[in-house]
Length: 432
Ligand code: 4AD
Ligand code: MG
Image (cartoon, rainbow, N blue to C red; front, side, top):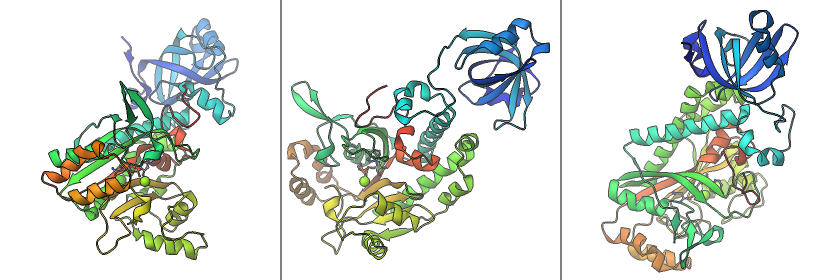
C-alpha cells in the first residue's frame, strides 16, 4: 500500500512512492511534460508529469484540468533545490475528485473588494495561507508562554451588561426583554479570575462598533488579556515584553517557510526579540512630537501619524507610559503625585504599526473605583459585582490586552488588519 502523506512531511519520504490529496493552483505544459502547481493545505509544491512515463490518459488529465480541481496523486517525492519548498513530486497517477470550472481568483491581480467578497476562496492563496499559519503559531505560542508562566486560561462571557472600554463603540443586542452588549473586552472578568486564581489570561473575540474605516480597526477581533494579582505595572511591562519577544521568536523558529512566502525579512524580526523594550512617558512623547512639528497638546490622544513617528524613533517596540486620565478608561490606577495621569502603557509596534497592546495597573480602592465609575456616567448596578472585587480582599493587580490581528499585521508586515483574520468584520462587511 502506498502511504498517504501531507507534502509538509516530504523530507521523510524522499524517493518513496506516496499518495497525496491536492488541489491545482496553476499549470504549464508542453508536448512532453506538464508542471502542476499544487497545494495540499500544508504547503505549495510542484508536480511533474512526464508523458513518456505515465499512461496517455493520465497525461491528458494533467493537461486538461483547471485551477482548483481536487485530486488524489500518486508519485515519487524528489528533492528540488530550485523551489521555495525544496521538494516536488514526480506524478505517476492522477485521480480527479472534484472538478473546478471558472475559479474566480485567477493568477492575475484582483481588486481588494473582489477578493474580500471571495474570502472563502481567497483563503486558499499563498499569502493568505502563510498569514493564517503564522496566526496559528502565535496562538500556539501564546498558550505555551502563559502556561509556562503559571497562568490559567479563563473564558469570559461574550454577552454582557458592562462597557469597560467606553460606551460609544458598543454593539447592542436583545437579551430576552433586556438590552445586552457584545463584549468589548474580557478584562473585568479577568480581574475576577485573577482574584480567584492569581494569574489568568483570556483569549476570545471582542466587538467594537468602530465607525471609522481605518487599516487598524476591525469590528470583531481577537484579544489576549492577561491579568495578574499581587503585581504592579513594572512587572506587567516585563511580562508584556517577554511575551512579545516569545511570539516573534516562535514565528522565526516555526514559520520560516511562511515568512519566505510573505517576503518578510527575518533579520528585522530578530531585532524584536532583544529585551528590554524602551520606555518613554506620555509627557516625553508629547515633547518629541512637538519638536518634530506635530500640532499636538498635552492631553491629546495619538492618531496613527503620531504613533508612527514615535515608533520610528526606536528599533524595537516602545512602551508609552502614563497617559492622561481623560483619554483612558475608568478602571486604571491614578499615578501617585499626579492628579492627571494613570499608571498605564500602550506598546507601539515598529514600522508604523501603532498600538498593539494597551494595559495598566488597576484601581484597587473601593470608594475611588466607585467614584470613577460614577464620573464616567456608567450604571452602578452593572458594576456592583466588579466593585465586590475591591470589597473582599483587594490586592494590587495589573493586566493588559494584545490585539491579535494588530500583532499579526505587524509580524507579517501586512498593510491592513483585514488579512490577519479569516473572515474580517468591518463597518461595511458582514459577508462571507
Ligand atoms: O487598548 P484596548 O482598548 O484595551 C483594552 O481593551 C483593555 N481592556 C486591555 C486590558 O488591559 N486588559 O485594546 C487592547 C488592544 C489594542 O492595543 C489593540 O491591539 C487591539 O486591542 N484593538 C483592536 N484591534 C483591532 N480592531 C480594533 N477595533 C481594536 N481596538 C483595539
Ligand atoms: Mg488602547
